[in-house]
Each structure stands twice: as structure tokens, then as C-alpha cells.
Image (cartoon, rainbow, N blue to C red; front, side, top):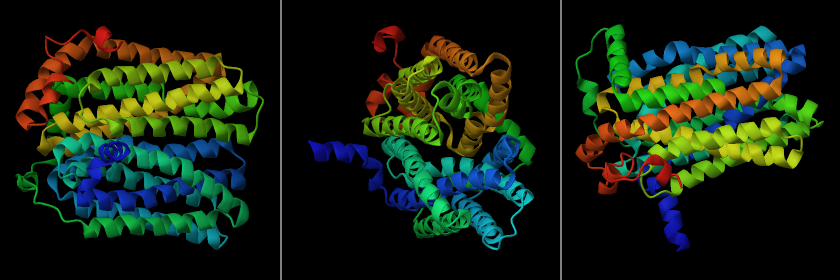
Length: 440
């Protein structure tokens, strides 16, 4: 029984290329989280400025909003593996340069800002290309949802491990070693990419047109098809109104819970733990059946968790609230990713996933700025409650659209030949009970 459960949980690993990806990416993600923590600490140590912390965060994220759609066009035009080799090599170079200036003792705040912007540009191309490359690594299409969930599990597992290691290294030997480790960690991904054996992908042979034309073509396709449009808009709304809750966690840790840095660490670990549980749950599912209602349920849990955290004045309740928040948020985003990956047309995969990247990450700087501004005007508690309310409004609108989404998705799943039950699950035909019944 246990062996059977493990096989279901890890079934995407039967694809050799995906196994290589998991091995390399697991190492690299730990290094990435180590660098994130060390970089933030370095900036604050050098300047003592919370404003410059925000500047570094903004410069690392804003390129996604501006450049990710063009990365999607490239992902649909060219072979994705060479593109990923280029982006991972550039990320390695960025970490190496950062390590060099720190270890030589010549680092200045402007070095960090410039290198942060450089990495933001690299990731603006890397993330949508990597998202669209996932389908090429998974040999069995029915394992795609499991692969996406396992990928999210890696991110959240590294989120728990990386900061801990970084904290120990920063305290004992300084930030520079963290950047060295991160630079070396990219070698694991590069080795995995070179070792993969990939089949020829036909879409790479289509005639090329003007990049703006292809970008407009992708936009027309994504926002002209109801299911994709609805998911992208909901992801953008939740990312804008709900996800910035993390910006205010330090405030609650110190002012509301009367704690310190350790309290803040426990709270963020709680959110990460909930997210990890969410990805394990998704990975354990046998199919993509029921993801429509799971999207709604994920948003509701996410909003409820944020609301409970905003109202809590006790540490245990705050921890539980953030576990629920992490679980709901990760379940929602991973479920949306899975649905998009299984319904979109192959020759537009890169562009659609770039729009998903923009909706998920590109709007984050503006959401964070808005939350910070509102918290100064009306207080952090009311700010979080308003954000949670925005998420619930989005969930309600999406729920009303579910019957239409199911109707349009059904023939796609039938044509693709994804297991038969999918045609009766996510789309839920007329014979299926209404959404409130399925949520019971």
C-alpha cells in the first residue's frame, strides 16, 4: 500500500529527462534561496536602509513584467534546451560576480542593485522558457500534473532548507560563501540539461514572423479563449491582492505578536510548510480531474488563512493561519499551472506560459508597493483583510464562469487523449452536480 502511494506520488520520475531535471534543479534551488537571504542581509548590513531592500526587490522582479512575453515568443520559436543552457549560464555568472566583489571586500550597494537587475532580466527569460520546457521532459502526458506538483515541491523544499543554511553560513563565514555555493549549484542544472535526450519538436520548424506579430498572436489566443483568460486574470488578481501579505509578516511578528527575528522566521516557515504540504497533496492525485473546483477551493483557503492571520493576536493561531495560507496559495497556483499546460496549443505554449509568469510574478512589485502604501494609511490588519476580500471576489467570479470553462475544455481533453475520466472531471458535463455540491 505504501509503495503504491509512493509510486503515485513520484510517477513523473519514470521519465528519464524529468529525473535529470529534478536532480539538478533540487540542488540549484537551494543555492538560489541561499543567495536571496544572503543578498537581503548584505544590503541591510551595508546600508541599514529598508528602502534599498525594496529597490533590490523591485529591480529583481520588474523585468519579468516587461520581458517575459518576449521570452515566450522565443520559447515558441527556438529549441528550449539551448535557451535554458544560456540563461542558467548567465545566472551562474551573476552569482560568481557577486561572490567576487563580496569576497574581495569591494562590494558597494550599486553593485548589488545592478547585479540584481541583471539576474531579474535573466530570470524573466528563464522562467517562462523553463515552464514551457516541462512538457518536453515528461514522456507521459498524464504525468504532467504530477510533474508540475513535484516541481513546486522542490521550490518549497528548497525554501525551507536554503535559508537555514544561509543563516548559518552568513553568521560564521559571511555572505560571500553563499554566493559561491549558489554559483556552483547551477552546474548541476547545466549537467542535467546536457545529459537529456529529447525528441524533435515540430513547432520549432514553423515559419518565423515579426516578433511583435507573434506576441500579438499569443495575446489574442490566450485572452480570446475563455478558460485561459479566466485563469490568467484570476492568477493576476490573487498575486496583486493576496500574495503581498508576506511583505507585512515582519510587522505582525514585531508589533502584533511582540516577537523578534526568530518569530518572523517561524511564521515564514509555517507558510512554506503549508505550501509544501499543498504540493505533496497535488502530486498524490491520480489525475487532473477536479482541478476546476480545486482552483476555487485553493483561493478560498488562501483568503481565509490571510484573514485569520490578520485578526490573530496569538502566535499559535498565527502559525496555523499561515500554514493554511501557504497550502491554499500553492494549491491554487499549481492547479492553474496544470490546467494551462494541458489545454493550450503546443505552438503557443511558450507565450501562454510567459503570460502566466507575468500574472504570477510580474505584478508582484506593484502589489507589494500597494500593500506597503495602504498599510501606512489604514494599518496592516485592514490592508490584509481588503486583500483577502479581493481574492474571494475573484473566486466568486471564477465560480460563475466554471460551467462555460468546463464546456470549452472538454473537447480539448478528448482530442488530446488524456485519460478518459478527465473529460468527465475538470470540465464536468451537464450530468455533473453544480459546483456547490462538488465542494461539499
